[in-house]
Length: 230
Image (cartoon, helix red, strand yellow):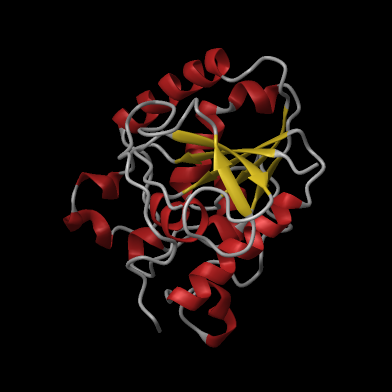
C-alpha cells in the first residue's frame, strides 16, 4: 500500500519579501520564516493522527527548504526519521532565487544531512545535462510524475515532502500553498482530485481548502497551468 504524503511548502525566505530580492541566490529564511517553522512544528505535532507514523522526510535541497525541515521537523529527525535531499523537489524557475547551491557547499553548511545521493547535475537547470530540470511544461510535469512514482513505491506509512509552491502547484497536486503550510494526500486509483494524468491523489479533509495552517488559497488549478511550452 503506498504511503500517505504530507506536502509542505518552505517557510518565508528573503525572496518572498518582494521581486527585487529574486536576484538573490538560494536565499535563507527570514526571521518571520523561522517563527513560522516553530508554529508549523507545534501544529503538526498536535494535528496529525497519532496512529499514523511518519517514517521518512524528503526535502528539496534548496536552503530555505532544508532550513524549514531542520527547524519544523526536528522532533522527527531527533527520533531517527531519515532525511533525503532530492533535487526533483526543487522549485521550477531558473532565476537566481530558485537556483540551488552545489552539494559540497550544502554539505558544509548542513553537516547533519547526507547529500551523497543528490543528483550530481544539481543545481544545473539550463544546460543539456540538466534537461530534467528545465523550465518547460514537458520537463516540469515529467519531473513531478517521476517524483510521485517514487513516492508511490515507498514502503513507509507516512512520508513528509518539503518543497516549493510553484512545483507543488503546477506539477504535483494542483493546489496553492502559503509559506509553511501543508496538505495531506493519499494515492488512489484513477485521477483522484482534479484534472491530472498518471497517479491519482486525494486530499484529506484535514487540509482541504486553505491548507492545514489555513494560510493557502483554496482554488484548484490544472497541472501545468502557467508553464511555458518550451
